[in-house]
Image (cartoon, rainbow, N blue to C red; front, side, top):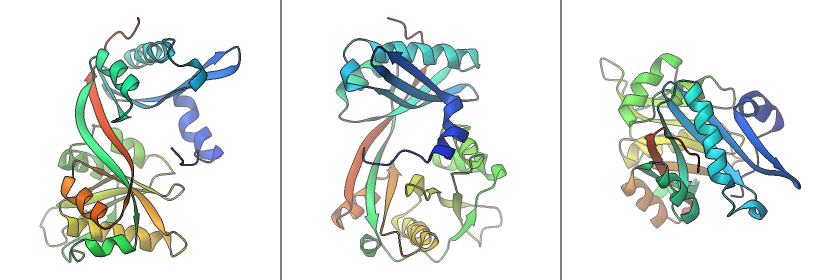
Length: 250
């Protein structure tokens, strides 16, 4: 990935306490980042240095993660992995994880939006409160607790698309705008027209200095097809794996 690392203050405030590091004779050989979301443990990252691969270090790290998550009351776990990362997929599936969702991250410019249907007039973009997270999680099938965790982090900006005519809040889409990347993850919309509404809003908030956005589109093949046809570059194809929390020791 060519994304920059998070700014040091963000790493210190949000990621350091969730991280495990494996040190070897030559320095850091692997690191991982995890978070307990109720009974679900989410592995945000697992990285092994190229010089240390093929020696079982990844499985050892997963074993440590499993122990930490189990101690926090987790009974299930999951992560995101590149579709073409064959060794990682072999490791995770050996631990009982199975594909639950798929996502494509695209680099989208303002020009690419012209390929989408006109922005929908029946949606209003509003800030998402902590109280909204449960309904959004249910509406778009997200891992319980994940969105609430984002809402509590200063580096995340949750925005939802609601139907202003509905008597009760009806969610038509949502996005987490991470300006430091810039990245929209997660990103959901009930139609390409509603996706355009969200994307136009994101570009407007970021200003003219931002020429492109990385947009992670989950389980929405029609939207991915339209953006690819318009010339949006595919940066990443991933699978979300989930499974029971098992003993990962060799």
